[in-house]
Length: 263
Image 1 (cartoon, rainbow, N blue to C red):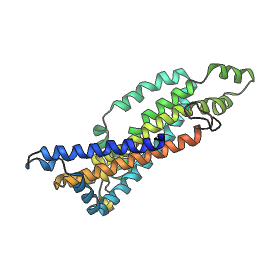
Image 2 (tube, rainbow, N blue to C red; image 1 turned 135 degrees about the vertical axis):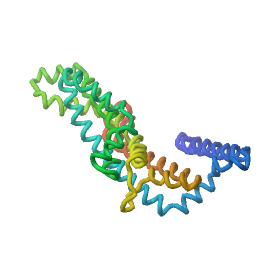
Image 3 (cartoon, one colour; image 1 turned 45 degrees about the vertical axis):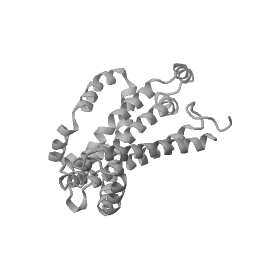
Image 4 (cartoon, helix red, strand yellow; image 1 turned 120 degrees about the horizontal axis):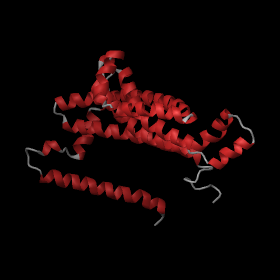
């Protein structure tokens, strides 16, 4: 059996086992508790039935996730460059980055609502805060971990600091950057969902998946609640797949983590 076929069949087989176990657990539940674990077919039916609302909510969540994700990439890359230029800058700013990372979103959300209002702006900023830290930490680590022999070679050829940065340190930091980007890509839909749940608004059909979870939970529509979770997972897979494709495009020709085309 070829490896490619095995890569398809093995996840499919495990997925079938999980679904079978799901039905088995549900069968073992009493009639009073079966609602806690809707059957997969009921979740699919709810997904189809509620798709007009879920599709609109998914679009709004994707918009917030993309805006926050893009903002985190831009700000973290600029800040990582500043942090890499001087150890004193890193010593001075890093504790505040840790404070920002450790502050719970549930505390920040009401403050953002006061500052920019509920809705897309707050969702974008919450997504940004969740995605920002892994990006800036990984990118900074990559910029300061450049091979010292190559740095000395650039110095020997009297390359300027900016030439060393753009022609040596930034390319060498790309694997670290994409590692942080993969982490942030999985967090972006979650951040948008949390942001919509804590600071979202349904004004002008602007409610996202987080807002839909509140509605379905209050209405006891549990299959629709599971369907909302499934849509969020799909968004996470799409974000991650996009980053993996971009990483392959940028690194596969030269980095050791990818097999060379000529091998």
